[in-house]
Image 1: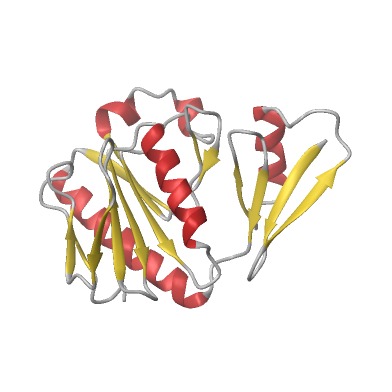
Image 2: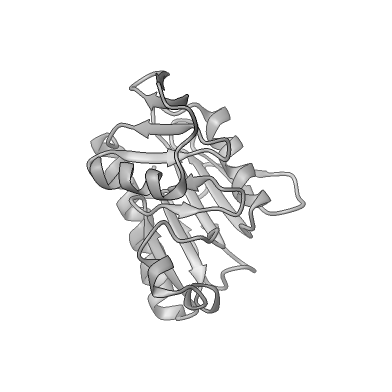
Length: 200
């Protein structure tokens, strides 16, 4: 039986489909292709999570984050950036879509064209998750831990309601910044500074 976890405005709903086994990678890809208007992720255990479109204010802030990241990446030239609609297949088998991501160029270029044209089998070097009013902070913290376990070097979890930024690095306790004006990506991303004024 395949389980679908549908993220509604306040709580996730679980839907069980009468299938004998979990979807294969190819079946999951086809499922996503058939439901292009949905934001879909999958856990390492095969649980499918369907999320609603972002609320307008969250989408606005997501774009401002991605814009700052892309502007820095264009000047830096050492990596590629991705927005919140991008899915990645992590080494543990999960398919995740961070709100913004960056991958070092040598790692991205090591993928085949076919891999790049699917849910690329790679974990981003840097990820950002922006908590919306409907997100549970505990779920996002677990997601950040999963990114680190699969190879992420730096992660920002932004909680607008509390005006906090949780910074994640492998092998370290997360650091919480209270109402920062900016958040630095050094040393992993030299010169990157996420300005928070337009994100709060």
